[in-house]
Image (cartoon, rainbow, N blue to C red; front, side, top):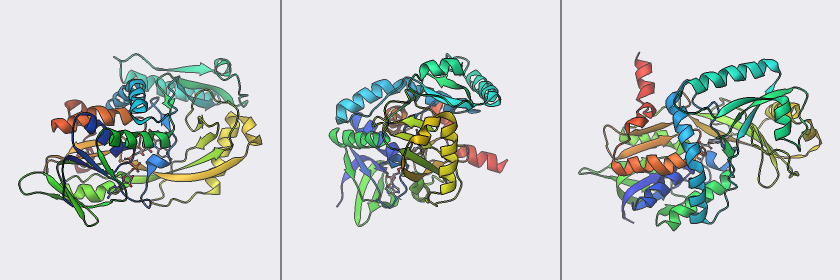
Length: 375
Ligand SMILES: Cc1cc2nc3c(=O)[nH]c(=O)nc-3n(C[C@H](O)[C@H](O)[C@H](O)COP(=O)(O)OP(=O)(O)OC[C@H]3O[C@@H](n4cnc5c(N)ncnc54)[C@H](O)[C@@H]3O)c2cc1C
């Protein structure tokens, strides 16, 4: 089968689907090709935080991007819900990072102050709150004695990540895009005159532009069009409890109550290659920490544990780039694809239509890794 599209997006996880949706909204003829169930799919297993506080520490460009994403979320969520008919369980009333003991409280305060000072022109969004104020914020919870306080960021929020993915893919199709599941791209071939042909199985499609947003499947595809981006997997394990009465009014780093009432507890950061196993050691470590914050969780049944692999660049910040050798080929990778979804459907999609990423995205080119290696 041969068809012509303006843009083919390789990968329809939360990143590829958001970009493809943005492209359809800009009137592009879009084909999104997604892989198979055996792929690594962080979009289906993540924590669902819209997280700004501390993001981009030492990297003001990433910090600014995260702030921008957070400020776009209310309008983005409303439009996405209207277009897809999916309730995203979107909330953006703020988020917490608990501090256990005065030393953690002091270290967190210093880190937050340094982070906020990176963007002097943006009004601060994160403050430290003492235990007594925290108790007033969480009237249904009894905090453990070790909790000294927390940092609170009013830009933080949460969402149901599975519903987000379903909404993005649904809105993409409702908006006129084409989405093919079970179509792992095996070859991207630059055409002699211009554009690309893209093969999945025995099928070949053509397009003027191609976007590689295939998560951990991206390096193999990027190499075909001069986009050699170094990434590595990082395992994150999570636990989820049975459904509980409302307990946590705000999401926290590593602890949040979902719209259904379950409490998600996480998240490990393990460099174990492509190993997707879960471990009792991680379950014990995550439970211990959660119990120090909320001792009442000891009475609760934990019902499931799973793991997923983050898509990590060497410095943890996203990569957005166009190929120098094959213009029209773009790559987009990050490990905050939920938080940054409005950026991907908005400015990133617009830049792909324009044929050039704006200067505000210069920092995010993967040349930053190759330059530092050469030095
Ligand atoms: C444990 C954990 C917790 C996380 N928590 C958060 C959080 O709270 N907030 C947040 O913002 N982010 C979080 N993340 C990160 C977030 O999940 C990722 O940033 C996001 O899923 C990346 O989206 P993606 O589409 O690039 O990759 P993925 O979601 O992995 O999707 C990649 C897609 O590409 C497809 N694919 C692969 N190869 C090919 C190919 N050859 N051809 C076609 N398609 C292909 C796959 O089938 C898949 O659908 C978390 C991640 C993990 C692992």
